[in-house]
Length: 616
Image (cartoon, rainbow, N blue to C red; front, side, top):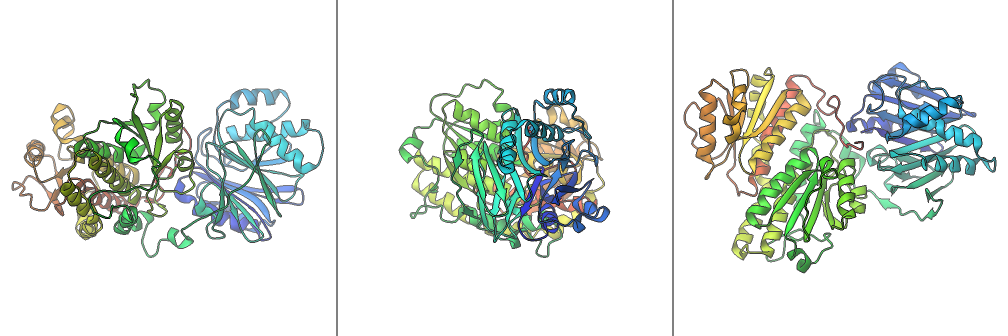
């Protein structure tokens, strides 16, 4: 969501920070700002809208100085205005602060600070935090200025309730930044005679691949020469420097019109990377090296719980179907945001999986901590090495699909579907799936990249369909069994990138209410599999046609649809049941993308959305 970038070094800070902010635009934001420290004061520029608007309308690039902080804001407290954009200054002008997260007790603190003469120029909780630091700084004994700065931030954070990732500068302390995190990611980039601070590796990867991932409750003190990390309790922390394995080229468009388009067509390679090295030598099952649970203990699990949000939740619903179908073990899927507030009977031998592309989704992180608090082992499925969820889980599975820049998840989602299918195989082979069935299953999974490539060849046909349907204002997406969650995902994709209202339903549920919506102005997208569900789905399609509804059918090859039952047909290769959800997803991604392009939407940065949701 909000993005943080900081810099200390020998170069002009403003240009480096603004470049970093532009690389964080994919996270979603509505305003941007920058503050550079120079000659004992702060030069600040901030504006509602895009980073490009900030650059054009202010002298941001002309601000000189070799240390500074920058921010892209996704509004929580207060509207989208220039005043509410970060960076915020304390009312005495001594501190500049940027902040991700939500300060839950800000109202009481603000009331207290007003009695002490502090003033406020914005509606944000962030300005309250900045002034509270100024208050403690004024009270702190004047030892060395650097330690006084650090200690007043530490003392302030002990009074804070909520989540935060912050970067603070003090006018008395040239070329210093104090940063801290609790529930909101922060990463230190260690460069050549320079340091960078960011909420996402994408902001700093052009300058260094050496990074330190801050943990919750840690405080970073940066100077032009060195850095140190300590805790809220003032205990020193020995930093661990990791190396990022991808490069800046992975975040470039490379000839595509949008990142969403690029990432849709990257899926064959991404799926190959997810599978690589994860099948047994005998070709009958999957292997996962990072689960940190023995096969004997895994065999004792009698129930699995999956926790996720958004697209990842849809992937978990597919995993539920496949695990119950092929491993015959009960599975529960919860929205992460709801799990903490339910008194769910969990059983004794349950195992949790949390699924998050970024590994920073705040609701999923909180749900994971709740499950751990109750004494359960929690494993993670995520795509970002060093993320908070990856570090705090007992083990897990990395997706290895590379950075996903488009806000609407594509390759990360199909990778999550693949991981779910592999888990179903892994668990099933531990129970009663035969060797020969396992070999057939593995061969089907190994064939996924080629089948997806063949499906992507439908892109020109789907683009033409999109042009014919872009003017509709409502869509229904319909599927059954494992394709129902895929229908939910198709509806979500269309909503996200085109702003068209869409709903996903089980196909058989149409007659229980939603059929009232059917008209010539509400097209339905049907997922039509071969096999036992074919005739059932076709019956639902005929009910729609009887009411003059238009139908786009995504049907497996070999399905002989009755004449006239579909207005448009998109064919996908026939495939194994475990693979079908992945393959069926591809045409819906393309349909949503091309409709959004036809409507001239900002595909990679949809309004109001954020790539990584780090606030509740």
